[in-house]
Length: 258
Image (cartoon, rainbow, N blue to C red; front, side, top):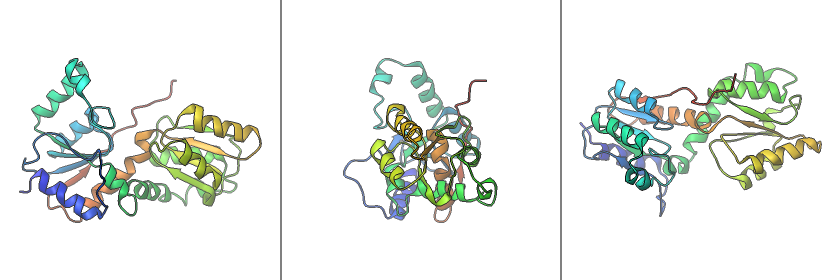
């Protein structure tokens, strides 16, 4: 039976991505020498995702996002101040002997980017459905994207009747920052993102629409925008990992006010 370290070393070798000088990737909880009977991939290691890993008999959790809310993994203040959420989550991890390994940078650095490839595949899977309708509008396209990615609280900026051509759509999962958003919009009419600062890309697309420049923005939420990439990760891992691998998907935690 392989250890967590043996599995993660194999994963990094298989990505083919050059190592970064500084990275957020690595073990963030548990003993890397633990024998592993199953691997779970998750987008965010929320408690429901961790419970799903336990229910599936997976002792190694491969997560894209941080365990304790800070991108760089710094939970010192939470631990020092005995934050109740941090304490209860830590107790759960210890109770079930989970090992958690962050797989963020190397999965993005893989060629092709593992997250983006998975998300594009999820969006492409339904292109014979509403997006093939003519004319396709921003409102119709936004509903399609929200459904395809499981986004419970997606938002849209721009004229809902804006005509959408699929070859003029850019997709940037997660959060990549305003400059990359702006550059993508230079060559696209519609941008699909995980999240962005409202005073940056939100205001930019609002102004573009009001000025008649024909731009639209679909904001699906960070987790829904990348979850398909970790589902793809599980399928990829099954091609070379000798223990069961499961993707643990969870519902979008955000919901519109009703």
